[in-house]
Length: 116
Length: 121
Image 1: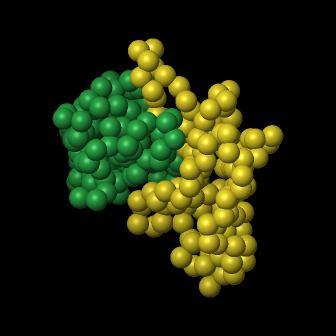
Image 2: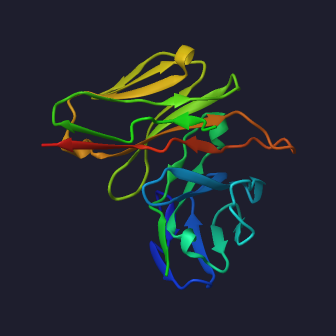
């Protein structure tokens, strides 16, 4: 596809369950980012991948959150034992190079996660 | 301390009015990049502009214009003759030229909290 694709678009889960969110970046983009946007809030950085490695995981809020990227392509964000405060839109973005190298990031439409 | 401040939480204007969205940033780096994104009700962030710290020329693109002033650490965004379709949340963002302890170039975008712009017909 032409843009960043995220699935599912909506996810409702029960408190305590694990969830996996998927991101398909734009082909050829080496940099990939996960952000979280709570209702009415700005974007909160979670993790950054360069290729398959994650040089910056500092935004992950707890050890319940993890992410991986394979084949310099698809990334999966996993939230274990979900809590109600995890409810948010999770946004994925990709860029040709790191944004610190003068390139913009392109965002997917996000996955709206609701923990009930 | 927040690296990007968008002091205006909400702005309402009537169609055809001009509107300026403020963005103030904070960084110790000499090399950095500034961005504006638009988030319409559909939710997807749309890239509007990228500006590097060495280029202080103002930019105009149709009804959009950007005023970058390093002296005041501001990167303001003006929409001229606003239209209803401009209604969205607008985010200002900063990317610093930084490295991990292994030398990898980092690419975190620091976002402001966003400004909700509503344009009434």
